[in-house]
Length: 598
Image 1: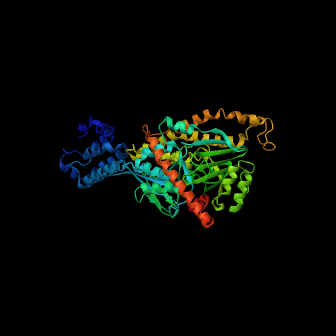
Image 2: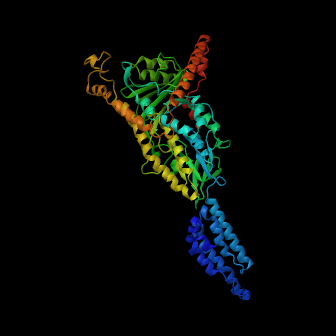
Image 3: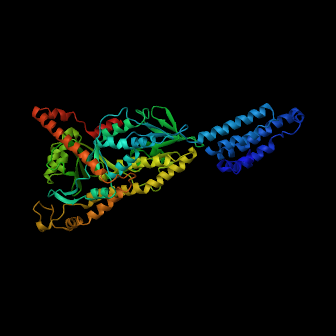
């Protein structure tokens, strides 16, 4: 059987690799041709005969087991038939049978198939973890579970931006998921977007590249969806039982001999898996253990960005609601962002450059007054919007990021990181969630090719090498945008106003910085074009001519209808005198996220 197997494909190659080990087995095995009476001699000789082949089998076992693969199971079974010659004792035949069973069992346990799937456990049920689970669940050789620390999913959180690259990833993962998403979506990238001179309330530099870069690859435009809507959709799209709530991951142990990972939970229980993915956010416990650092604080590797952001959201009807996607009002040491987020609402972010540890008001009314005061003298559109926002909907948080991890891999054996756990970034480009979705997509592409569990460590290292340079570039671009707005931008000089602008001392007057900013507007379009072309360069799915136009038309028709309904309802509540009471019941989404995490 050995000779027949040698020269027959992969099984033959396995047999050739195992020949030295089985040569020792064969030489130590009593001959079938010898007289039976010779095998029934003195007790000492008989004992030696019993134990000699067993010892030889044990000596060769390690090399046999390490060489066996999925394709070698049949060959192994045939080869191991040599270990139970007809002339041996019952005890010898039993030892051979047990060894044959063990080797074949181990070979099969290393094999990955639909009957013996790779067990994947994800720590964290945020948007990135859920999208990764959705992608991985599409692969029949993978069995996925998610451990989420929140006791239950509640409807909280503001809108999240999904750029053209993320929409392409979602569509390639699942067509039905994309179509359901479009029923909750609002496009902003197909409208006017860009930088606004906050002193004069006029466009400084539009972001036309958001549209042209998407058009160049036949992609849908950037837009927004409410985070609760997206989470509910993703939870409904993964198999029942995949998600377990109230399960906080606190650590892991890598098991020897490619046996996987034991994941430790805060409730004292453990979960075993073949692949463990840490999608547990910027203060990741998984990353802390992998890189031997603190999960949060000075020793975590995460650094304060120099910004504190205030955020709010309200039903609001500006004159240009349907024409504008988002605006970035720019000025010295701070900037203010507004975006249409659907259903007649405007979301805003106020980014203030303040030293770490600066005392920020705690009371909601004081927060609102603080933001209004910070942008005093800027465009009246800012103060009008903040003033119209219910005070309990205004919240703040300090922004942190970390440098790219070129010298620390995201993978350690069968464990890997994704999303904010390994590449948190500033929110300026709206790519944080998008890059996490790309991570999940690439993991799916890599893991679906795994055929043996022993391949997992190399596959996860390949995932890291595939993603590190793209995510590092996006991190750098996001941080660069923040630093330019914080340290470089000021109110631009306007030639028609002469050397001294009529806006007050130092506001738009002729000076070197103001002049440079004025002429920067002629350079920025080329920079934005390169930036958005790069961001949208990962698009595994492209649409046919005319398909994007139809998608956008359907979404924006619904968007217009939803907005008018929201404005009408708001007007009725104001007339009835219940608007303030309704506003009081609207939670701050930062506060809700923090409460859920606790």
